[in-house]
Length: 136
Image 1 (cartoon, rainbow, N blue to C red):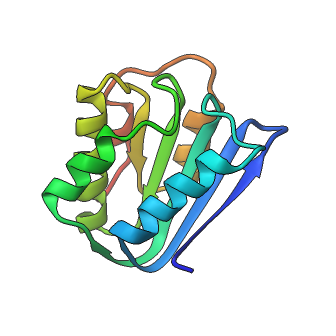
Image 2: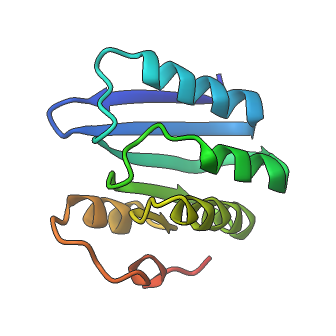
């Protein structure tokens, strides 16, 4: 399976890991499965590890459609970690579209330490905090 997840109820966090090629069906499966899981709470935060994703098979329109779907609450902190510039750009596109739909707390990182630090902070950083230290 190209995507898997673990729900950490104590930390109120979903950790999603992608590897290999990822496409529309994989992401829809993940979203649907997560919402059916009795341990899932839409107010949890999410850490998405896309560092081992080799290919993202999504069109611009599909990214827009995914952004319209609501799985997490608008205030849930969601940190995407990517390993290359193309995936970083696609994640930022998703972030921008989610922002259009009212979700302001999605950020994209190239470092796990940076992503974890942001998720663990109680205060909301300025909107450009995701770019600090990024080399993508």
